[in-house]
Structures are given as structure tokens and as C-alpha cells.
Amino acid sequence: MSDLIKSENIISQIYYIRGVKVMLDFHLAALYDVETRVLKQQVKRNIDRFPEDFMFELTESEIENLVSQNVIPSKSKFGGAKPFAFTEQGVAMLSGVLRSEKAIKVNIAIMRAFVRMRELIGQNKELKKKLDKMENKYDQQFRVVFEAIRQLIEKKNEPRNPVGFKTGRK
Image (cartoon, rainbow, N blue to C red; front, top):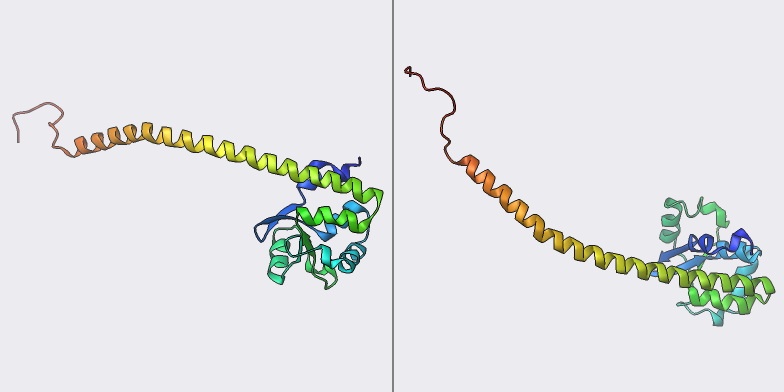
């Protein structure tokens, strides 16, 4: 398969919007090697297959946010149309709507990328748990260090014996 549909490339085009992982229509169109307007046209013709938990249109503020994050170079990229965001289920539905060999192969690659992303997130959760456990463990050890420092500070505030030679003068 071409570099375009490698798992790493696909994962880099998956974003969190409205609390779900999505891919944007123009990225999908590039992967499917069709124009964005053609992809959107096919979706609109089969809109019953795309409930809101499969696909949604981005709001102005979401578009602004993506522009500010350099996901989108500028709003003018869309020619006034708002992009669609497709969830994993929506992407799966696209292969039935686009009906081409390439669409099937790309969808398989995208599904594998979503699975890989879930695996990576799961690994990160395990790593976070381990780090939390270590942090708790070391907090206990550092508590002893902080207590020792406090004791040293308290001793410094006690009156000290004068240092040096005593002379007969006052």
C-alpha cells in the first residue's frame, strides 16, 4: 500500500472533537483519492446511513479551533462549506457508500489505524497507572526528606552558641 494509507499517517489525521475520535472529510477524500465534494455528495445522497454518532458537521468555533491548531491552513480551504467529521463507525459506513476497490482497501487500513490507536491509548493508561503508583511511593520517601529539612530549619531558629575566641573585652 502507498505511504498515504500507512497506519501512522492515518493516526496523525484522527482528532478528538466533541469528545470522540474523528477523521475529517478532506483527509478521507485524499485517502480515497476522490474530491471532497464527491465524498460529501455521496454522504448526502445516503444521509440515512450517517446518524449524528457516525458523522456531524463542524461548527464555526470547531473550525476556528482546527485552524488555530494548524490542522486546517485556513477557513478558505473549504470554499464556504463546513467540513464533516466522521467517527470510526461513519468511516466504516463510507466504504458502502463509495463502492470502490480503493474505498474498501482504505477503509481496512483506517479501521486498523483506529484499532492501533486504541491499543496505544490502552498502553498509555497502563503507563499512567505505573507512574501514579511510583509517585505515591516516592511521595512517602520524600515526605521523610521534607520532614528532615523541617527539623533542620527549626534547629536553625534556636539560639546558637557563639563561634570564635572569647576575649576579655566586651
